[in-house]
Image 1 (cartoon, one colour):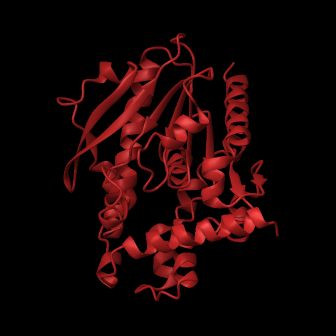
Image 2 (image 1 turned 135 degrees about the vertical axis):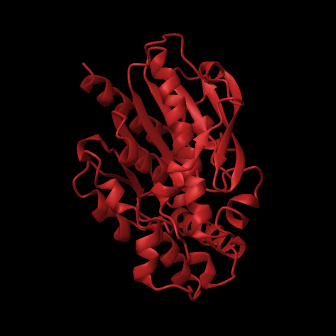
Length: 303
């Protein structure tokens, strides 16, 4: 193992440790959830009185207001349209606790490098500051569902507006948490031509379990119940596997290759010799090329 890889794994360990410490420790009650993700999604709606749809295809940052089981939640999107109204839409979602939410979007799809698509960065609920994603977003399983459902409803609303104005098709992508969100989006709505999860899989329960094992933290829930709550493979399996273009890191401590690669056995999985945090912040050229190649594939299928 190279020195760079050893350092990268240590950075992953530190990041996981810091996140683990910020997740609430208040026991089994967090895992008692009377609703499913799809229940929460059904009760999450865009407040159209406060969110004019016409602004969402205009360049710049825009607020969206969600009516939810937990009250009103405000999120943002950053829109970078291209000149051709009939170009495809690339919906991009950030990682958990990525502040600002446009960081990896700007690295992968910088404004000074042409992209043959409208691109929109979506902000998840509970991402107003560094503490909120874990302190609030992981306060309970229902909060986790709400964090996902809010993003899903925003993605749907943005896609609807762009396609009404002529966008040819939509590709969904995201990194880490955003990769999970992009898979759930296609699994639940079936409205994209391609999905590109970066350093992620639908098995969120596996990530939580592995982190608990790494830090010798006893979870107040059985593995079976954890999987029932946070393994989204059943939703993922609704997707046409030919339309999924995943990337995993060979030295990733978050989404460990040995625990997640089997999910993608029917897809053209790409693996890179990177760690999780290192991949997100350093392998922009390779990942950007993969993303644009996936976009080109989707375009070839739309004729």
